[in-house]
Length: 311
Image (cartoon, rainbow, N blue to C red; front, top):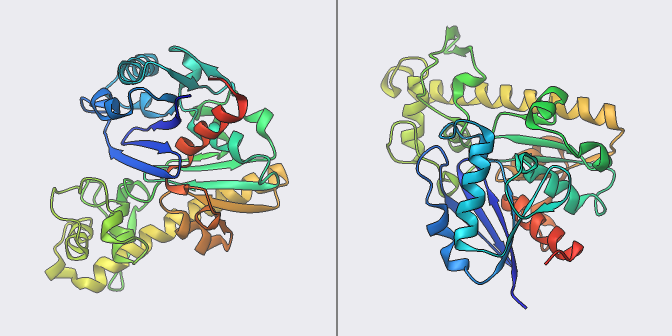
């Protein structure tokens, strides 16, 4: 019997789960994504697939993105099935496949953590998912989730600094910030010690290196300056201000969802799971043996496929 693998096709990263390992490929869907080429080594296996990359602006609409992803995956792995927002697997393109990765995670974890809220702090977004409400989650689109606070568009690596900051207190002076794409959340988290340089796995805004020094320089540009002008302390003030705004936004939505659903606790996942567990003093799924929080939807869709016996 062929091995089942789990695949999560995101807007920036392609994640593959197989047995006891996860592989993450940088594969931006807004460019000519080489999905088929990346997945060719997995030919001969069975694949359970989720996606969110259909929203990339390289596609004219979601259905075009869904069609591209399904066709590209099936070229490499013909025996593939796709998990939808109805909680079912599908053989071909359907609008139900759009952004179903978070639901696969809920489907996988809902019995193990039935009274918890999942906070998946990824590279680009934060999913806030009440695991005690699975049936009511079915059919929800990203628009629905944004309205309910279940999706917060801020992440560990790829969020621009001005997406949250309008001004910063810099060396004692309130200072407006530029809206240019000078720095991103990875820069803030790196200089604050929340991530290591090895975790900085996305392109930098200026094409320079991913060192702490380069991140400090990028942060200084947010106020149309240079590191020599505002100093390391000034750049760190910008990073701290961004981080505080980011965490306040996530906390506000987590508290809202907990109140509405009567959930009793929080579990964290995603590349920033350790950041969330430090803020909320909650359970980090990386401490749960056998779970891979950096690629939870890929593992989840694989486990759900095996549980339901669809292959």
